[in-house]
Image 1 (tube, rainbow, N blue to C red):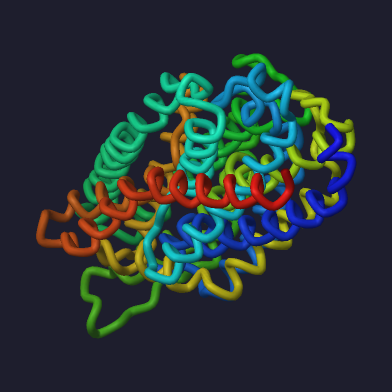
Image 2: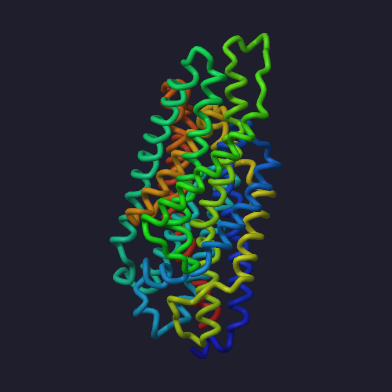
Length: 421
C-alpha cells in the first residue's frame, strides 16, 4: 500500500505512456488487419481506410470499450493472490503493456499480422506464472485461448470459402454477370448490416449497460440490415456499365458493384474491431489507474475514465497512420490476390465468426479469424492462388506470440519490482 501511495503518480504516467504505445501497436497491427482486405482489393485507398478506421474504431471503442477491468482482474490471474500485494498488479500490468507493445512493434516492422489479444494474454500469463506462482494462472482459460488459434481461422476460412463460391455461382457464372451483381449484391449488403449489428448487440453494448435479449438483438439487427440494404441499393444505382476492350465478360463492372459493398464491410470491420479489441490497450491501463486511485484496492467493476478511451483511440489512429501499411500489404496482397468480391467474402466471413464465437463465449482473435477467411477465399480459387511462404511466416509468428509476450513481461516485472520495492 505504501509503495502505491508513494509512487502513485509515476505509475499512472508510466501506464499512460505504455498504454499509448500499446494502442499504437494495435493501430499498426490489428487495425491494419481489419483494413487489409479493403485496401488490398483496391475497393478503397489507404487514405479512405484511415478515415474509416478513425471514425468507426473510435465509435466502437467509445460505445463498448468501457467496463474492461473485470476480465483482467479475475479472468486470467487469481485476484485473491493480489489483494495482499496490490503493487504486484501494477507492476504486472505495466510489464504486460510494455511487453505486448514491444512485440507488436517487432511484428508490425516485419509485416506479421499477429494477435493483440494473445500478445497481452501471453504477457499477463508470464508475469502471473513467474511473479505470483504457477497456481495463480487460470490454465483452463489459457487452453481455451490456445484452442481458438485453430478454431477461428478454420471457421472463418470455411465461411469465406462457401460465401465466395456462392458469389461465383450466382454472379460470375451467370449469363449477364453485371445484372446478376446488381440483383444479388443488395442481399449481401443486408447480410453485412445484419451480422455486424448482431456482433455489436451480442458482444459490444453490454459494456455500456445495454444488455438486450437475443430476440431483441435479432429484431434490431434485421431492421438495421434492411436500412443498410436500402442505402446500398441507392449507391449501387450510380454504378453504370462501362464497355472495355480487355473485359469482354464485364467482370470489371461486377467488381465495381462489389466495391460499393466493400465500403460497408470496411466500416463494419472497423466498428466490430473497435468494440472488441481496443480493450487490449486500455484494459491494463484502467486497472493501474483503478488500483492507484483507490490506494491499493482492486476493484473489478471499475469503469474506464473517458480520457483513457481518448488516449487509446488516439494511439490506435497514430499507429495505423504511421506504421499500418506493412501489415495491410501482407493481409491485402501477400496471402492471395484480392478483388472487391473476394475481399467482401473474407471480411463478412470474419465478422460472422466473431458473432458465433461471442455467442459461445470463445475468446478469439480478429487477426487469426481474418487471415483464415482470406485463406478460405484463396482456396476457393485453388491452392495455386495461395502464397504458401507468406502463410508459413504468419503461422510461425502466431506460435511465438504467447511466449514472446510472456518472456518480455517476466523481464519487465522483475525490473519494476527491483526499482520500486
